[in-house]
Every structure is written in C-alpha cells, then in structure tokens.
Image 1 (cartoon, helix red, strand yellow):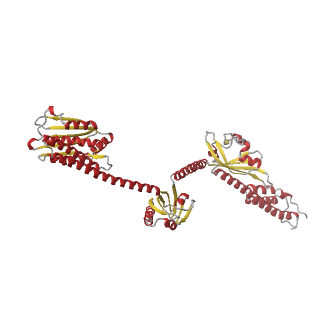
Image 2 (cartoon, helix red, strand yellow):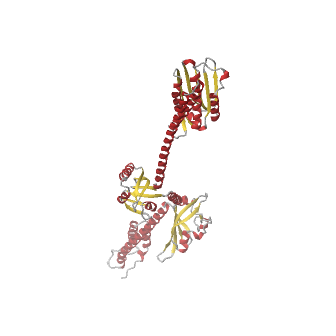
Length: 564
C-alpha cells in the first residue's frame, strides 16, 4: 500500500517554527507530541494495528526521520542567524569604540547606517544630519586650503560609494560648528558583493591636529636650524676657521676643507686615523696636546690648546683649537684657526717694545746724568760765587733741578711712562730737601694710590719744592729747630696739598714778593691750580694748593676712598 503522509504534513510547520524560534529541544517535543496526539485522537489508524506493513505504519515510520531532518535544518538556520547577529553586533561595537570618526553608508540610498561614538567628538556635531534620510554631505564642514567648502561628491566616503575609490591617509581640514578647525586623516573604501557590486561604503577619520601642528613646528625648527647652520657656516668661513671632529669610538678624526688646507692637504673634507693626525703635530707639542685632550675627555668639558702643526710640505703653522666633548655620542667637535701671522706680529711687537724699553732706559740714564751734571755745575758755580746772595740763588736753582729729578725718577717707575705716583714723588722730594736744614723735622703724609698725568704732577712737584725750600731756608733763622708738615689730601672734587711750618712767619707785605712766589704763581696757572698763603708773625706759614682733578682721576680717588 502506498504511504499517505497527509496528516503528518500538517505538523511540519509547527516543528519548523518551534525550531526557529525556540530551539532544537522544543522542536523535538513538538514533533513527538504532534505524532502521539494525531494517533490517539484517531486521525490515522493505530500504528501497531495489524497488518504491520499497512499505510499507517509506513507514515509513522517516515514521520520521525522527516521531523529529525527539519529539526537539524532549523538548528543550522538558527545558528547561522545567531552568528550573523553576533557579527553585526561586533561590527557595531568596533565602530562604536573606534578612536576616530567612522561611518557606513548603505546602498542604494546612501543612508548613514552606522557611526562611531567618537564621531561627535571629532567632528564637533552629531554625524547624522537627518536620521533615516539620505545623507547630504554638502552640509558637512570639509574645507579646501583656500577656504572653499567641499562639495558632496568630493568627500572620500562618497567617492568610495559612487565611484569605488579607495582612499588612504588623505588629508582633510574640517570646520566645526564652533568655528575651530581640525586636521583629519581620512580612509575610505567600497563594500562589494561577490559579483563586484557596491552595496555600501566605509569611511574613517582620525583627528591628527596635534600631529600636524607638531610637524609644522618641526618643519619651522628645521628651517630655523638650516638658517642657523648656514649663518654659522658663513661666520666660520668669514673667520677663517676650520672644523674638526674626533670619533672616540672609531679612533678617527675628520676635518673640513679649511682645516685640510691648513695642514697642506688637498682642500676637501678628509678623514684619517687619530694616530696619523698625531703625526702632524710638532714633536715638541705632542705630549702637551695629548695631555690636554685626555683631561678634557675625562672631565667631559671644553678643550682648548695652542700648538704647532707640521704641514704636508714640511712647514710649521701655529694654530689655536677649541672643542667640546660630547660624551653621549663619544665625539669631540671643535674649530681651529691659523694664528701663524698673528704670532709673527706679536713677536714683532714684543721686539719693538723691548727695543723701546732699551731706548727708554738709555734715555733715562742720559737724562739722570744730564740733571746730575747740571746740579754739579751749579754746585761748582755756587762754591765760586763771590757773595752770599749769589750762592742763595744758585742753591735755589739746584733745589729746582732736584725737584725735576724727583719727578723724573717717579715717572721712570710708572707702568705707562705717562703718570706719576704723587706719594712716591713727594716722599723722594722731602728726603732730598731735608738736608737743607737738618735742625728742622720734616714730616710728609700723602694719600697713597693716586697717580697724576706728568703734565700736572711735575708742576705740582716744583711748587712743593719751592715752598719747602723757602720754609727750610727762611722760616727758622740762626739754626732754630722746628717742624715742617707736607700733607696731601684727596676727595671726589679734587686734590689739596698743603705745606706748613712752625717758623717765625712772614709779614703780609712780603708774602707775594720774590722769585719763588713768581715761580709758584706761574706753575699754578699752568695746571689750573689755586694757591693760598696764610701767615702771622711768630705762627709760621701755610701754603695750600687746590687742584681740580680730571673725571677719570676723580673716579679713581673716589674708589680709593671707598676701599679705605
């Protein structure tokens, strides 16, 4: 008998639906309960009723494998559906967590169906301008370098959707609604079916504003560095300096074209072992150069030296070298300059100065001999003078010559042969004039550390000599004892020298007469000094000389006073 599965076929949709919506176990239960129920209610004969190979038994036997096949098929469909849903959820989560802006356009409408959570942060607004509607990209904020806004079909994701273009790391500037501009790095590409049809487009955009700004700063720094390097090179070339470098790790030395030319080598950058460079150093300077270089390396600091180099042609050149040790990279870099001509000029100058010193000493010797000769001649003349008045005049002349000699001796010991130490000059003058009257005690107190130009110092010394000579000869008659004080005071305004004695004094009528007074007045006018004389009979004479100092000398005096 042919099987009749009609009653059981009615149960198959229930089994399929149970498998799709609730799983394998509910589908199996549905199939079993459906079969039992159908048999019990008598829709078909009892499956075990004789004969055994009747149509009902055949239908029952076929029903169970059919249900099993449908349950297996629905299980596979359900698993595939779940996997597809999970894949879609994972894709959505990846998009949501993407660190930049990301979006998917769906075909054929071009609708934005997926975007990342960070899209709003990157773009400054919700990427869905109109939910569930076709995206109008012209409303987005892409701008060209000249400020023109992007057209809708210029965006990489639109080009991927409409033309199938693949975009990799395209730069795009984006104007946010708040007016700020960010730099984006955009990637985009189409999604195709197995037949090659475009069904969607994917685009991502990373905010690279900080990186772009850093690159711009780096480019600016590179430009500044190149400019500084060019200026340094120009300065080095203008100064005739050579550049050298020692690689401590490789034990080699490299020099530029200028340094190579100094060494008599072809004028081009040259690299050589350090031992070869050591052979170019003058044999008398090698040990000191090596010691100085090793000390700089040990200290990690500055190297400086002056030495002689033997050129490739056998000549000798004096050079000055300065370098800096760079311990981090095991190198020493520096510059070198040829000072041969400069040293030759210095030697010539030292020879000239030495010759000048010889001439000056010879001139000093001749001047001292000449002054001594004048004093000797005046002394001989004074010894032969027939009367006392003549001897007094000649004695005063001898005193004036001795005053000039004292100033000359002070000038001889001056470091610059232009200024005179007033303290030394007055001390020498008092020592020599004291013999005129041994009975008188001569006291000299002068401020130390003051030097005057010879044009002022010599007339001042002559004034002091005239006043001292008058005091020693005339203030103490008949060999009377007494004292004479020479005082030199200085302040910020000028110099004051006073010579005072404890002698018999002078009447007012005689204070401005005589050759000595004329000499003093002439010398005072010569240096712009003011001379004041005060005296009372029996109370001695006081002569004060006030001299205004030049600005430089006044500053020297003020500094000396503050130090004291």
